[in-house]
Image (cartoon, rainbow, N blue to C red; front, side, top):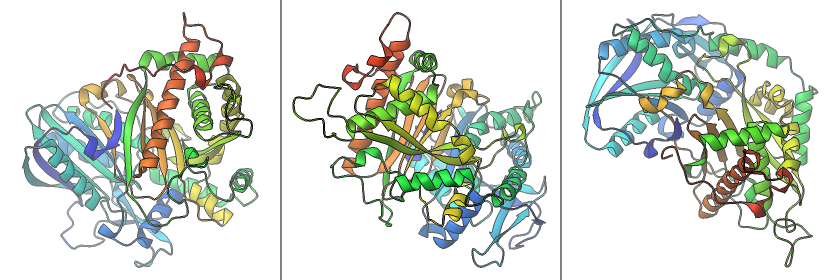
Length: 515
């Protein structure tokens, strides 16, 4: 499944209809009619997101922050689809709940109100036929930008496009409703419910817990964490070792022009892209090589990122003219980043829709002569205990440290193959989508493994230097991963201790599909 922005999507043109949720039976202007007071607290990430939205103004004054899913359905049975969508909203209670300022005016506390199962209806508005896929995608993006407002309900909206091949469904959600894994779950669940509603066989879906229960439990746990908790102490040490700031993109250092000023407050346009790193067989060889040397796929990816960052980031005092290629002229230091972890700590949350994500800091030391085999154990050590740190919500960490912390360089990894329906995503033309971003210096890398291979989706400031810097890191990491895979593959014996950047071969050009 491709993870990208709407303008990069190959949308099939057709008849566009927008589907909007409304409280069932409530007359227009009825306000709180149908809503029931709900004592379950907001999660820390939800609260931070909504309070931030309150501070940022309303509507067009704020940049959108949505995630979306798009996929095809067989036929164009609007009645069956309506029944499927309503059953899906009933299945995930968080979509029937909203958080509002406790006093109705400001961010001093939030209260929750929730609609009961069966309390939602859908209203359909036909927008018309689009002959151009680009214009269609642009219009859907406009709808998502306008109607995924975290300060309103619904903070999600659906759209369908009827065409000669059937029907494409688009579902957009403000981030307060979903995380990246939730987006991956949607296609399988709704297709199951749609098939059952046509009529067909009963939907085969796992039981799910409510994100509202998770949020309330997480809140109670996080409230017990104090400023001398081990995880908070480690966060404080991490910040101290970085001059009191969270890490920036590593290639901004080394005497170059750098990315935009990390202290800048003015938002700037971000650009992005998507590149394949490995095909499926090479990804398996890479995993085997990592396991043979005491690591795993993620620690191998991190080791490669650290080595390429070291190579591209500058020279140390020993380097210079005449230095041996690949052995001298390398910077000593460490690779620093934040990485997300899921917080689905119980089986009932596994297939639940919600924002189940925490982040943890990474520090991977890299010396001038280090090889992949040297750095892999360091990457493994960096991940040890990281998931426990991520269990404490990032806004709670910021609160305890008394600092306004803003992630600037984030590396995410997800093995999408474990998601229900993953083998069928290609046939369904499924895609995961994100809103455009405005930020002066953030760089995000999303490294995803599918049945077709491994790709990286990324975004960065819209400057030429940032584009070149991120391209160098992405391309170099792909080449090094390919080299490590060759070292561990049968019939291609190479000493792992000799896997250095000077030995890199060109990255494989075989791609499973356009990215």
